[in-house]
Amino acid sequence: MSQTVLEEVGKLYEHGKLLFLKAKTPLHAGVGRTYGEAVDLPIQRDENNLPVIWASSIKGALRASKYLSFKAKNVEKCLDYIYGPSTPLGEYQFVSCLSILDARLFLIPVRSLRGVYAYATSPILLEYLKTYLDILKSCCKNINSKLIDNLYEGISNLLNNIRESLTKVSALVSKRSREKLSINNMLILNEYFIKDYEEFESNVINELSSIIFGNSELVDRIVILSDDIFMRIVNKSIIVINRVKLKYETKTVDAGPWSEEYVPRGTVFVSAVLYSRPRFCIGDEKLSDLRMKANEACAEVLKQVCKNSDICSCDIWSIFIDSGRYMILGGHETIGKGIVEVVKV
Image (tube, rainbow, N blue to C red; front, side, top):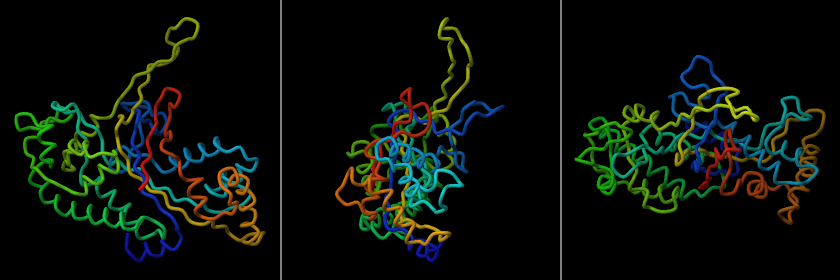
């Protein structure tokens, strides 16, 4: 995306946050039932066949959580003004205040013969993060620009440094990672033997590990794999569960078996949320009238949590977008799936 385009888009957005989503339980953000495939209920995948959580799933989960948490009589109308009309033929036609980006894979746990597990990433995943950092620093007025700039510069330098190395070897690890994970001078990840690897140190990986995990210990488990090797082993980390439905009276099989895919606990995705002030189209009513209606609809909800009942952007950001430390994504909530920890940058 060119800088000119980003600068033009940037005029629309006032706030932005980089989000890391850490799966605390197995996660099934699915695409529905498929037929004739190896798995009946597969997870969402991107254009490179990597696990992804599409933005619509995140936005729907945010909206649902806010709907349940507020008791104001105008809450549904209020959510329409923030998240966009709930139906395509709503009372008013206008765009959502939010632009939520797809949650792209950033780190995924892989089995290790030594050390039990490692966290794998690759240049293509680091490129996802770099793109989101570029969008945030170019499109949003109110962000932690120093941190975002430092992370962008660090990821850019890291990618420049590792691309050539990963044409010669299959993996890069820090000295501590090699000590924890290698056995007989090999990395054995998801039953894949990697003999050609090099030691590599990165300050930005240490910083990201501290942001995501809250401590630097897990940085000693991060392995940067070449894209080719990563694409070969990532699917071996996906969990496939076979299930059946039982008859209540007899506890015998009523339906099934069917199979479901899950992203494993510990997987980390990266996303971003951009916020603009409400943008309404001018139709039968004047723009000022629609703004007044938005103020009225939001006022009752805002009064529950703050003294200011205006539709100022800081209130909207903290109340209607901030999901807290945890949220639930995807299906099978009642059997403990899809709980993710949200780390906001």
